Image (tube, rainbow, N blue to C red; front, side, top):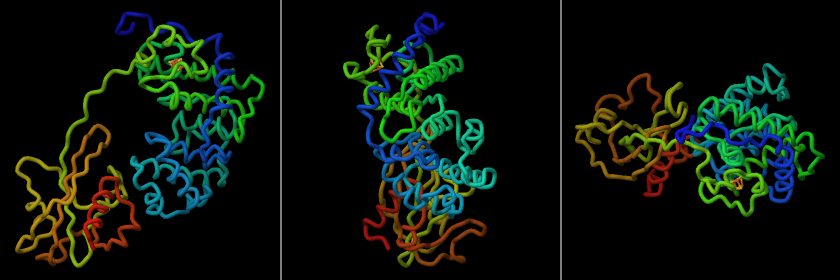
Length: 383
Ligand code: SF4
């Protein structure tokens, strides 16, 4: 039973599947947006677009995808690329494990599949960083296989059309959604070809139509039911309760965290450090940073980072607010011109730290927040 005491399922798409699938195909044939990855059937190019689109808006992804495909046009190029180059191409998109997994999977395709992207759903799913959604997207969009996809947009559409009760992250509800998505794509496969230009066939078009409908029409707030191709069969609309579905519990606010960052400049160079493997932002460059706790000050951090006498003046440079997983982070960056350190270079042994010029910095991948700090430093005449 759900929080309102109603049974989990009110009404599925069920016997309506062929009608709903046909309406979606017809709508998509007319309304599909012109997107660069819709002009190709190359599974590598489609895979890259799908990974980039996770957690990121289409308009942000377009220039990233175009740059990536120009720099690494074939899967073998990605497999052979320097990891630093891959991260640089991803710089600013966040969730950098996606880029590392892309390269790990590309290398696996080369070693285990001779460089040929596998066509079997199970083999695609076995690649690093590829889950059920991405495997379904690649197999349906590149190969027109009748396999379902389920992302936030599709969940919203399906939950509303069937007025599906319960939290979609709960196992039973989630499996029900997968099952409805599967019924629809199978129904689409049985219909006459819809001939959406450039696409592999009905399975590709159906899955993309669900995502497109969720992105453009069946939006989280203010769905435009008057323009929806399936409104005649939508139970949530009929109930006048579209925004009630899906029943996602309100999340607790993120945990606030304050971080201080030092932009130490010496002879036109700044001190940066590469994040160690296995942690957040692994392989990316950052300025020295530390969480601000009671009693800690930027001056004391400066002395531990680069012991100099007398201590130079620290000036506020920029404040950057961003979120990583459940943390809401306020990063305060301070700038100081420093002389040579009291002992050695001030670089503790074993740490990957370097003094680099702005030109060198431009060739390295920084985490999004630190890229903004770098931009602020350069903007104020740094280097
Ligand atoms: S009718 Fe409205 S609520 Fe139902 S699927 Fe369409 S846009 Fe979403």
